[in-house]
Image 1 (cartoon, rainbow over the protein chains, first blue to last red):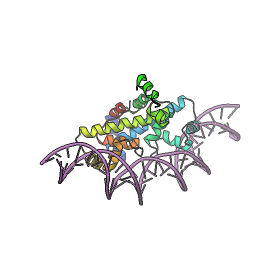
Image 2: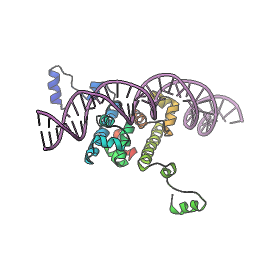
Image 3: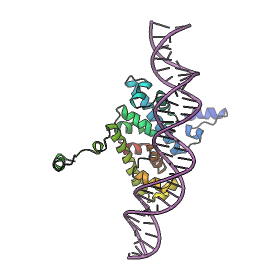
Image 4: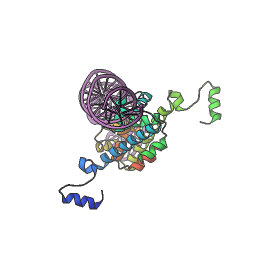
Length: 102
Length: 102
DNA sequence: TAATATTATGTCATATTTGACATAATGTCA
DNA sequence: TGACATTATGTCAAATATGACATAATATTA
C-alpha cells in the first residue's frame, strides 16, 4: 500500500498496515506464513500446468482432495513438509523449491 | 563414490551405491532427506557462528536442548517446519533459506 | 587427570498434522 | 437453465511431531 492511500485511510479512522501488523505477527512469523503461501501458490500453479485436478494430485501423493485444497489455500493445518513433499512428487527440483522460497 | 572404488567394493562382495539405494528411497524421498539435512547442518553452522549453545538456542525458540540436538542431527522426528522456524528465529532471511535449499 | 560444560539419545504425555469422509460452494458446458 | 465436474470447508480418529525430562556420551578446561 502506498503512503498516499495509507494516509487517506487513516484520515477515515482506519489504521492501515501490513498483514503482519494486523494479525499481530512477529517478523519471523510473518516470513514463515508468507513463505508457506508461496509454496502453496506454486503447488497450484504446477498442478494446473500439468492439467491435473486436485483429486488426481491427491492420488499421486496418497492423500485426499480436501487436503490438496487446503494445501493450495495454505491452511494452518498444513505443514511445509507436506507442501514440499507434494512439490517433489510433481517433479520439482531443489533449485525449483529454492526459487519458490526466495 | 567413483567407479573405481565402487568396483573394488563390489569385488569384495559389497553392493556399492547411493544412500538412496541403500535405504531403498525413491528419488523424491532422497531429495527430501537431503534437503532436510542441508537445513540441519546450516542451523548448526548459524548457531555456532553466534557462539550459542544448544541450550541457549532452545530457550530462544521455546524448545529444549534435546530437540535442538535432534534438529542438528536431522532426526526423523524433526519437521522442516521446525527447522525453518528455528532458522528464522536465528535471523535467517528467505533468500538465506533458499540458498540453503538449492 | 578430574571437574565441568556441552551435546546425544531414549522415552513420555500432549499437541499438531494427517488422510478420509460428508457436504457445501463454485465452475463448466450442453 | 440444469447436469456434472471441480474445488472449498468442517470434522473425526489415527499418525506424527512436540517439549520436557533423565541420563549417557563427548568435549573443554583447570
